[in-house]
Length: 66
Image (cartoon, rainbow, N blue to C red; front, side, top):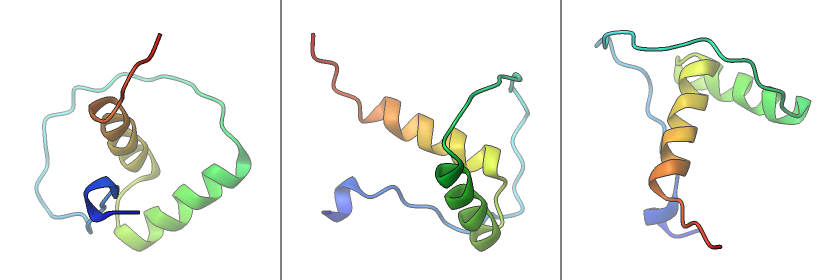
């Protein structure tokens, strides 16, 4: 995969942003949850934070075809 298509995660820094979040329930495959748990432990970011980053990346890189 070319570098310009990679989803890059860096270790969490001390800076905090204002919380503008809502609570939402989703279902996902156990394997996906386990992968996020591993990445969370490795990066120091919460699983929720990583999923939000991934969702934002998906929206920013989405091409909708009818």
